[in-house]
Length: 629
Ligand code: ADP
Image (cartoon, rainbow, N blue to C red):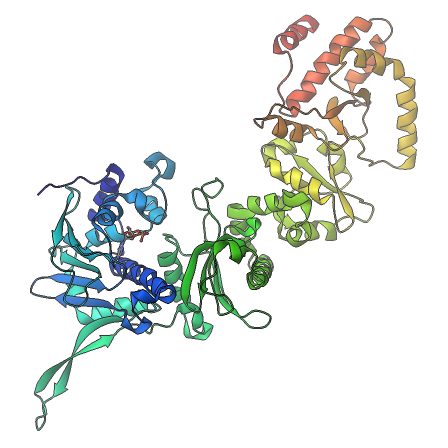
């Protein structure tokens, strides 16, 4: 018989499973039971809408058998089963695994991560078995097939007579355990109590009975120390879905295990919330925040959504309508009695009940985040590091219509002590004479701190929010204000930090030097709107500010986008009247205008460099420096 090779990536993953870097080998059982349950779910769902299936809920089972002499564990289900093609496709290629598409090593990093990203799945069988045999017959199909593999060398598929004497359709998986070694004891999985314990721990909520023959010692009648062995078929799991149980019956571990198994994460979640809602709509929900953004989170590949159940039956794997985009990182499920089983995807979108549930869930998520922000700042900062950008995008989306819901979730670093603060915290500690909320943008905090435009604001004793990613500035532009305080960039030309007297003095001085500014502006035609005196500079000779809505940082971001339309901020070149350079300029003005214009170009380029912007003509700039030296 022909041995087929595994698809390259599958082989790699398989290899990792066998030389298991994964410490919890025991999870193989929960993975295989979970697959069995999914397969039953599919057939059960069909039976609900198609009478010809002829099966009731009570007919379904998952059966575990252990055989100490053969050293085998067998998992049988009477679910939907697999055709030969499905066996080939589902078990021969990793890409078909319901979790995630394969990414090459360098995109993921550590081995551990690769497994996590996929969910360990079927291949985890090879962590404990030296040979795996799968017998399967798809419901409605005549022929059953047998798939067999001893690991990376490949697998075989051939027709077989039957799946199991327990069922005609469905799947039976036989694991021949690996030999025990000094490091590993595989025989433990042949102990009844061990299997019972594992099912209770990881698979208790599975909605179909997981059955196994359990032996009990019974005292022989008329004796005090002789026993009979009695064997009973028992159901090991409680079958109550986790989300139907009471919070008080469950431990954090129960919730975390459930999450990791269900949503294929190798890390426990950062936070979870169990909701039992009654009222306008009744539903149970389990909501989780992952501790890390999935590697594809900020790509188009990522699909948001919650699992949707009605009365315990899964009707949709990822119901996107249950989550707004800005909370797309939330994983979990919703179970409601109020939804019809036969509802189609299209109808669901317009379903009033579903909309109410979505609203209620959104509120729950918001409240939970606010609670975390108030009670566990450290955790919240981690959350924000992973998903804060998504919330900022949320503020920018739909013309800013979600800002009222999201603005309280924002945190920024600030000039006060480099700590992350909320906008409310900023406003609460504003000095009485401060009118606006100040921010400064740059690639890094260090770069922002070096901006000349921050000097005057800081000298006033005002705090500055540091914006280090482009979306920050777009978000506050969408908000315009917070608690009636306008957001203002320290580079805005109308910063308005001065007293009436200071303003008057500056106006007079500006008037006096009008001809100087005109001469300089001539040299910078098309680059700046005007040249003027600055009230914000302390030690630097010059800076650029912007008039209107568009700042230099935004210009940079927008122009980096792959579109043809380019934008240009309206710039103003501001000179520091207290700087020796200014004295020099006034002395030259009128006597050597050509030199004044050369200085103007130099100063303009200098200001650009400080903003981390490219200069227009580096060669000319370099020549000018040499010439003036
Ligand atoms: P995942 O469960 O994440 O999809 P697996 O590697 O565990 O990935 O399984 C791959 C696929 O094989 C499943 O998606 C399913 O289609 C199929 N499969 C696995 N076990 C069974 C089973 N017991 N019955 C029917 N199909 C199964």
